[in-house]
Figure 1 (tube, rainbow, N blue to C red):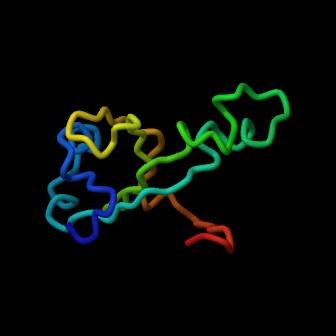
Figure 2: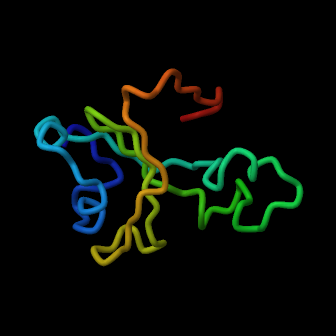
Length: 110
């Protein structure tokens, strides 16, 4: 792997939900832990009457693994035991790189 800081490829369940193509496997992935403030959708992130689970600052929901492959950009959800080998992973959001027009990062991003 090029840079798998979230250790996605070390977790069988995470690799299973990624469904890497042969090209993606050949090139490797980049991953890291991120805070996804729009984890429940942009509308819920700014709605006054949104449920607590939609709260952008809810760390049990907004901490996700961002995975970049040669073909896709994905956000993966994982159980709070993400660093254990028995964690449960799922794809929260994914998009083909060809569909991206623009990526915007906040000024204060690390």
